[in-house]
Image (cartoon, rainbow, N blue to C red):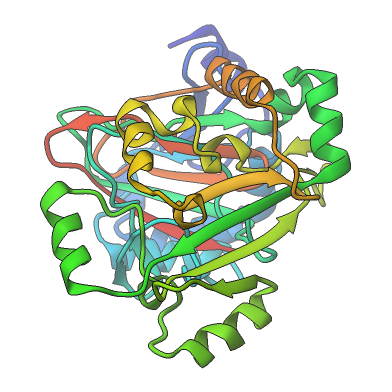
Length: 349
């Protein structure tokens, strides 16, 4: 056991579990049951989580993320039980940026992007006015290699971002611009052939079929919208780029400038060249600017990428692992992988 793990065990522990960290890294805090016979199923886990909720919340705020390992969790229904135990309600994925399908209730599959693609670090739905306070990832099938859900402490990221970059984001905020295609059988078939689902239709993203339904939903969600001649719709909204955590009062880097902006570092080489097929740049799936509409300097974006890379943490999934993150404190992403991989997601408040 690591020195860090021994230090954790000398603290006042949670009943019935061992606490440790991976090496000297504080994120995530790993919890394992001392006696697996005392926890038979997800209901037992939920009861334990509810009973020790205050102590768990303190640890979640301290570390940013908790990994439950070797607990009796197997199915989407199990994760729904856990979600209901630790959250007041579960988020759906209306107006979400990336493709994913509901598995059971509001338990979703992880983002359906090609296995070779690295999903950049981001705080879930930080581009929306309403976003989940917590997000959970359940490893039902661990990849043959790679496929780690990468994470980063956004308190540390905030501290390490250069002051001029930080001040610009804090002063101006971030404007997120997204384009959703009109549903087309031809385009859907082409996307399925090339394995690229990054450009969603507005019908799928908003779960509506008519323009007036979409417009009403945009008003409700605080999104500006503009219809384009090809039937696609562009939505935009400006959000703070830096927030204060409501519990810890710490300032946090909380934006998706680096994952939304269509630059080479953010997109990766293949998707960067794919963007040149969009003759009209208004049709790009994603873009990010300052909140006043001005362009973010590419040098600033690359600096942000450097800091995120420096703070990236990756640990290997084990089948049955459940990772609980404070969505404000910790960003997440995904490494490329080989072999089958099945990770479920729950967004809760």
